[in-house]
Length: 149
Length: 284
Image (cartoon, rainbow over all chains, first blue to last red; front, side, top):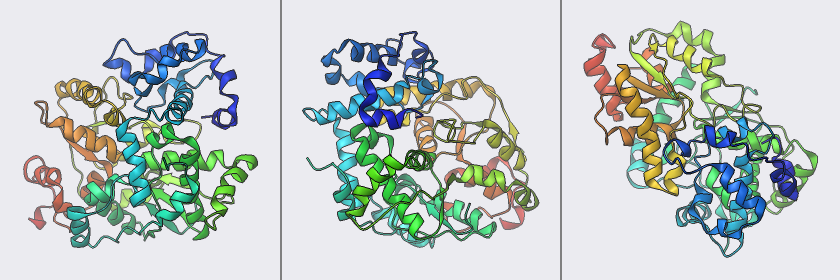
């Protein structure tokens, strides 16, 4: 997080190169609890050596977003943010974005939310006297995002 | 925080768990807060950040700018939302980054000046602990394990939440906090968009461990963790019920279980029928 501004400003390279492959990130990784073969360290290794095959791998997306790796890293590499930048790159080049995630972006463009409030939920809301959810002007979302394919 | 508050309900609560929204609003009302509903979109979530970080930041900046225009601060019901908005507010404190976001916002006639305070409902309740203490009328006397969830506490430089907040809030309801290993382990819900098996196995790992601890309830401040554990709970043999914190608090401060909205929660009704026969007896 602390480095996110820099990462966005295309300084990602320098940050990745601070990694000395100690494996602290893997020792706390949520995914590691159920998939022993996985560690953010390994993905970062592929990025350091410039192995483009990693962008084809589902493993690039194995992340629960818990942020423990970034909190733990003693070199402030912030693996979670590095992997987010790598996934951004995968999505931009050849559109290798997982289908479910593309669907979420499509739903935000269409409804302003990942899940629309319709059917039973809408009826329950009325029965509970909850305020209606305000309509989002999705044209605004369209104008400020790069989601259009 | 400003006196005037807008509620950030997020995506999952209004569409899948509206009774959690009802209960949270009920509690805020009892604290003399009548939050406004504004034209907020998805916060947006971590997956959108993985897809395109610039779009993620722009959508979040739009949400902050709407709050700023209405002169309100934000209370979020979901730590995912408060996390995204806090992180964005932090990034946009930088003049260069704010200008970059504003270049996009100006296309839709908006601007963000950098002046919004975002809080999740749990730290907010913690800071109102003294008022809440006076409101407790039905101590619950249950054994509770806490699942804090990730985004309410990390990144730790942006969040003042500590596990102690939930401990104190649970004790406030008259319940006993049961300590256990791996309290910090994530629920795995975010992985379900990529790989359902991994996601379920992560949640099972914690629930199976907790099953031997003799607890009544797993309580969480996050609706996504709540949904994840409540779904996975059905797949394994366990008596543990999963609760979103405001539900427990609502029972303890004497909002009757049959209040409009609360009766939709089967868990509340079961608790009320079986485990705590003394709760709200005059209301039965």
